[in-house]
Amino acid sequence: MNADMIYDNNRECWMMERNGRTFNLHCGECFELIIGNSKMPCRLELDNQWYVIIHESRFNLRVREVYKIVI
Image (cartoon, rainbow, N blue to C red):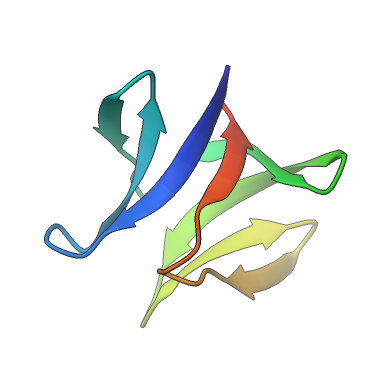
């Protein structure tokens, strides 16, 4: 299922939005991040800021961006 991953400033967490409904995402959640035409398996984590781990590499998420994901 494709969805948008958006940041909720009030809750200070990432949300999955699909068909007008939103669901909280939590540390340790696994999904595929769509980058261009590729789907990259990743895991969502939180330290001082939110990031994803893709193939043992960490990438910080930008809270003003909307990411396409597959759950």
